[in-house]
Length: 207
Image (tube, rainbow, N blue to C red; front, side, top):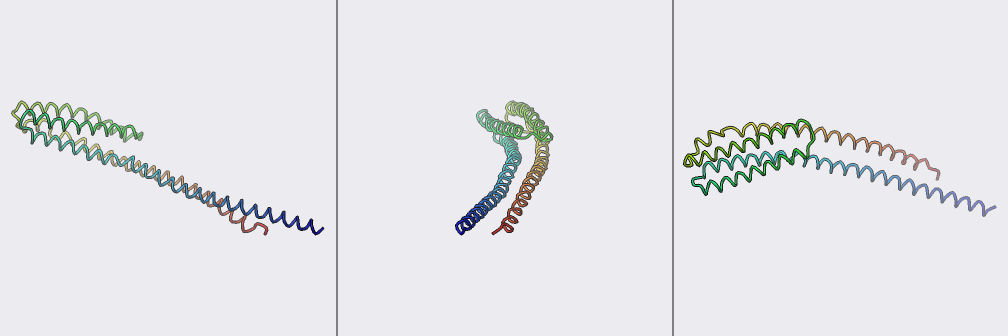
């Protein structure tokens, strides 16, 4: 009889110990879920920030292109210097065009895509105008006045377009950040409910 009682006590102790181990494992698992959710949110927010910060880089590169054109007008005083300066301008133009295409590939928001398509089309059309102006510069004996007049102000609409894209991107970034944050907050709240339930089980579990 005593042996049976002892065995029952041992069995009860074993099941209680096993239950505590299980509860501890479950508790740690949900702690990990919460940590992983916050870490994943941080990574996603960083990705979104990187994705929508490229417009600033494009604005800088386009302003550099405009500066290259000004350099061409001011520094070209011979066929060789004109050729060298045109190559620098053309290289910068291609860099801007490639950056614009990268933004188009990475974004599917309608307003952003439409504005970037408009920018890309106008940017390509302006290149032909700059090329004609460069030829005018060569024919005029490298007097920049007439060449400059041909393209005066054509960069302004493109800069305004990029500024509008930046505003649209900021709004899209805010929307995505709020959506992801709300989703993760919901996951964390659900995990906290489970943790509370586990804590109650641990408190009321028979000793």
